[in-house]
Length: 205
Image 1: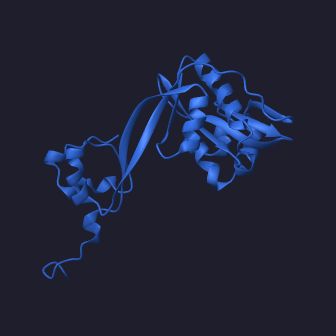
Image 2: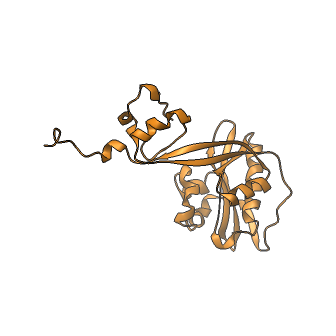
Image 3: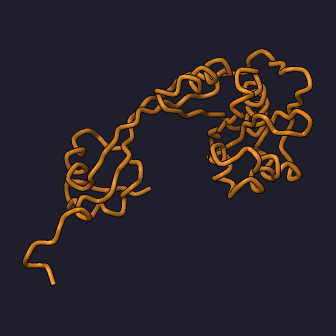
């Protein structure tokens, strides 16, 4: 993570942060506004696991179990819209072999999964994904509950982060035993403003 002293930094010196997300006090926003063509605020929420919840029974015919290396094709078959869940593991193969994921299967087809997205010394932040046609059937809840039990057994605390506007994610977190502990705003930065400025006559060749 870069640490920048805005008081001693010219806008053009921030160009390497283009297309990144940053957290900054409001007093530094004018500097960012001079450095980038676009700054979009994004409100985020952080939740921490507060203890187990009653067992969740998925629909008949659904088996909830840990992912294994043999599940790589099923993880890949979730498609590009849900591929983000495996990015921190280097892709579907890495996630399937990580020992940090649980899936809900019907006839060997992966319908929903919960996995560790980022692991720290104290917390494991989790990711959850369910095929659109399978949502609302308690599959994600069952996977999350199993994953949280694993994380707790490893001596860490499950954590959850989502956008304030993501009401389905917030609802799932609350009913899965998580409590809200922090809210913050980070900013999506666009292209460097300097890149859009036309050269002056004195600098044209």
